[in-house]
Image (cartoon, rainbow over all chains, first blue to last red; front, side):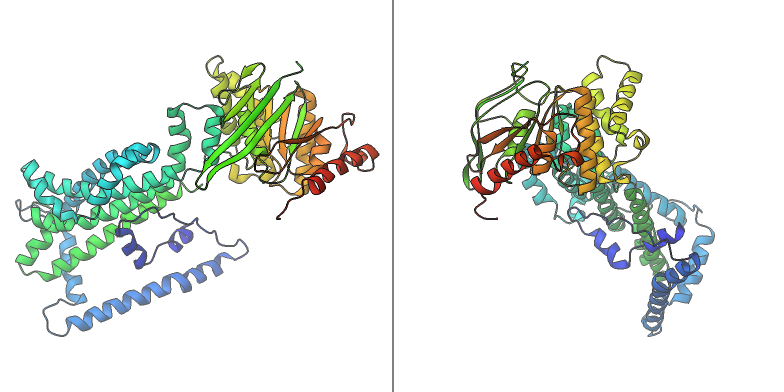
Length: 296
Length: 263
């Protein structure tokens, strides 16, 4: 089973894709490998087609990095960064006051902000998407506003947050909220609009109540779209958190990056970049796994 | 009751982007209780529209439709519809798909156990008890259509409405389902209205065949009484003179009198 899962790890272009705010993208169903292929051949094929290119790609990446770093421009090389990373991760949860905490605390703080901001966005965005998809009048009312606000750069919302909440932390959460709500609204609304007419005919033949239509037909039929919206939203939220925290300070990966820049500790900045990338990748994969449950 | 379903002077106009489209005009038809009526015609002749009108899924722009003496104002449990493409909800098992209908019709009056018994009975009627807990994607197209029939029958409808129910199936599966449908009709005595474009299907199953003229402004062209004795057997009937006469009657209507101008 793990083989099948690994086969579907998307390449880096896919990850980059997910950060863009787009309308619905349906994840193609997973193709099972043919049964006639033996286990050994299967593993061999996986190694040749999936693992090998990735290993080579990563190796080349590290090589190019080392070459650039050896040019004497102050960029730390892979080895130097690795040593530093081992040191950072050997004590991730130390606490020397508000401005000097272990990487673990920074990661948890960032995840917490993303969790709260994204959670609130989901709580409001998904039901709102349903209403927009279901009621043409409200769709007409809200779609110009959404079109207007959606392209606004996330950080443009920060001053508004600071003004209203008078505090850095809620302002950062506000930025996450406002920038991650759009993909969920739009994808949910599109999904509701694309519920096959057949299913709605069944609802009409049975004269189902609006509540029953919602729970037995609209919700399950829209789930793949909602999941795509959630995935895009988490991507955006995670993308924005570093920038937001750089500006708001406190504890978090973004603040850590800025702090280490002030300390001119470039190794730590590179470590932070990797940490942000890996956590983003893990979040994406978890959501892809979850989304697979809703592929009917 | 000799006039169970009455279609009186029905007109159906659709407002399309390219203007008004008169789909049906002056359609008159009376169907008795227990009768099996097929509606046949070329595609675009409004036969599905007519069925949707009886189902109450759409409202006529003129004329009246009555079922059991009452005007059809919308969908109702006394009229069960079997859709062309089975229209099962893919996230529900076969039993749950049927349960959805049963719950809607009998949910207020009966216990959960009674509802479940009704589901089991409906699935047994179409021979699908073993597949009750499978998802639609795990069963064949013919089985899906059987579940669709079970769902419609589970509501204990007085009228069963079938919209090209077997059109998407292969010939052998279609024949099996036609036989099943004949058995069910013989057993329950429902009134059945079936839209089809299959001449053999219409002659084999029907008491009467309603032949529609071509659209726009389609209407009932001719009505053919099929006087073949029941139960009917497709193999025996293959050499039957009457069967072949009925068959050629329908063929002549479709391909000589109502010849399609552009295929």
